[in-house]
Length: 183
Image (tube, rainbow, N blue to C red):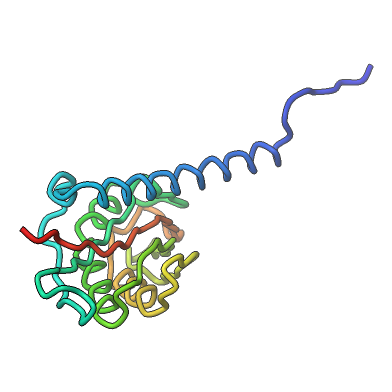
């Protein structure tokens, strides 16, 4: 008697999951961009306080201010290994201003940089220190931004987990210039 199973194989299920996850991230980032581009008070509504202002470039009107907007997308967090997920979420949210400073330095030199970084960092299981940080995908086309952000990630430290094994964390961050409307 032969046994056959119907349905999708594991590879098909994995491919569908990857596709749906990627589609979800892209939809979320696109929705955020649309929201911010259509709303004069988008930053306030999202409780993204104290954006950093750039100096207007020569092509912009003197009253136009450009703000560096960095938005770590915590919904995209993926964890491998044992690490306190709450402390990672809190750290990523609290360190948004460091990402903004990185982005601001890039915007000062290249005002049209925008896009998303897919980031990954590795945490030592024995010390809680970030021992490696990399950019998995760079949709900003700015190596300077990617280098600065990963440099910030390498400064982080978390409570050491109860195991000596490493943990890997992945997430996306969106970088958009925001121009204030003259009032």
